[in-house]
Image (tube, rainbow, N blue to C red; front, side):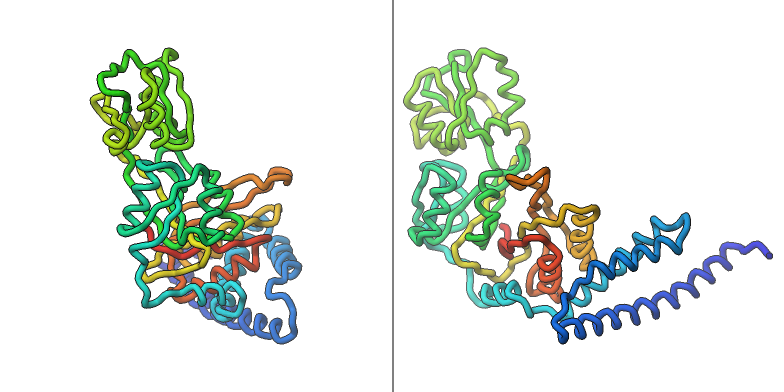
Length: 380
């Protein structure tokens, strides 16, 4: 046989690709027909037994290429499910919930009763002021208290820190959100500056204890390490409470926002800000007891758990990938009482108004062991 040159090889590849396109389109249409027939007969849309049989047959026929053939068919079935989801979009309780949440012509409110954790001067208060320029803030000691105020109707919204660029996620907030009783309606990214504050006239060498929230302590790790073991590091409920403690105790300094100096009669005792990075940002979310999707929403959050089987998480991610949607965050958290099984928190860059996105969410929901839609919102 004559050895093929590059042009001949490419020509044959092009010929095969033409056939593959026709076969692919035909298979997708047949998949849709099968889905419609299943719905008419009341059968489940996803038939895992048949999928396993297809993968088994493909592997057995492929010899040394079985790994690649199996991957090819997995992708093919994932694309087929995504297409079927888009075709049947809007037929589930999830789709109805999303449709009922849409506020197409409404603007995000500027005034409301807002719950925050901490006291005056806390970073949550700064975030709330940016989100609600004419808002009325009520303070609570704990995140549970903040969220309870919204669930009970005492407050319209709650503003909660959810993630820091230097120190990671605020897990206590994720623990509250995973139950789905509150919906995220807005997000805010706030640049965080930490200063070391103490009673006026205090020198750094006179400080015996530094107090702050554990997140702020983590964000200032390099500075605190430089102090050695001579200074005690203590955590408290928030950075503003730390400033109040420092104002009442000589020899105690607080890691707090700059605004707390004037509020509590303190002064900065280091020349510079003390956080590890100047690009230190905290993401806050605004949550409500009522789901609402406002114009400009471009971020979707949800939490799910999947079957504890090989490839299950990959299969769910492939549904998102099939729609060419960017995953902004994926974080796992152990499920209490289960043997190293996890729930997964997702943030994706998308809007439910985009074609196929609701169908994609419906498909993810059908394919998950549990699924909670947390909201579609704009982050500012």
